[in-house]
Image 1: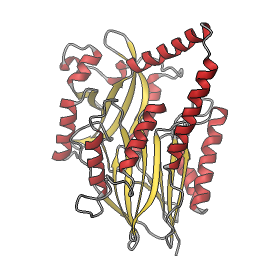
Image 2: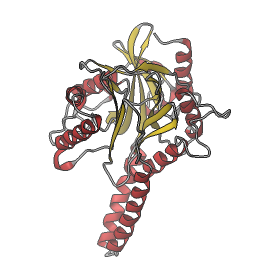
Image 3: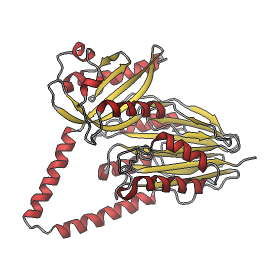
Image 4: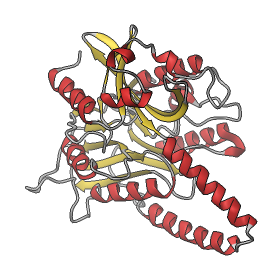
Length: 402
């Protein structure tokens, strides 16, 4: 059931967010904010509440699939991962079809399953992209020296990519009975993902996976900026409280959200941050809208660590909760970005959670570094010549068997 503090949190979002937010359950749309009314060009809230979400999509999506069938997959993915973000074509009440970045957050309200939906209108972004493509065509037809321009841009992008890769972990912590591994596969020269594994002190290891919305230069810049505050070596690191003690993961996320909630680019970040206590093998973690990692036991049993709240940069007053899980001998934790499960083959099929679960059970039989390499290779083989459509980050932590 949604607690009072959670209800207050969602109410703040409804009242102050500029993006459209609404709630729906099996009965239809039960609440929405003013931005939803304006975006849909509805008369008032009652007009929206009388609708079923299915009428707000065209019959087919750009990939040729029926909206009603694909929507069921998106809802299932959100309930499995605790959060799901994807692009979608929606329809306003006057018939205009427009692109949206959709965020689905499954919740319980009054003991019944429901879904909090956020729509970020991509109309202007897509229009700007089209204009850029048109300008590129015009420049080419005007016989400008695009070769020199492209060479310079490529050189700059390669330099930026080298800087970004330099922020990834190089020397992993060497700890008895605990093994760390990671993989990072950007879909373009620059990535919106970033990850790290680091020693906080003699008794604690910190690690995270961060995923910034969007792609390209702007996403990469924001990922680097956020990672700066998550570095244990940065003078203004948020990993320690002002009094010098290690900050709880929830504190880190709340302070980071304050730092980036007024980002003028309107981008946001999902983040899973955790601290592992080496003497007890207890992991304290907090989650800002990131896919819940999977904990695989020695016997193959698997569970998802949920506890997800708002992504960084959406709600000024967002709060986060700490959770604790204790690793047992033979356990392996798999943390990943959503680009892994959403990787598509040439038929438009996503790699998906079922294949991921099956592969992780197989990976549990080998050392974590081999498991990470194997999983990334399997996903890359799945995508074929086109390669992944989104950045892929993987962090694995394995505990020795007795």
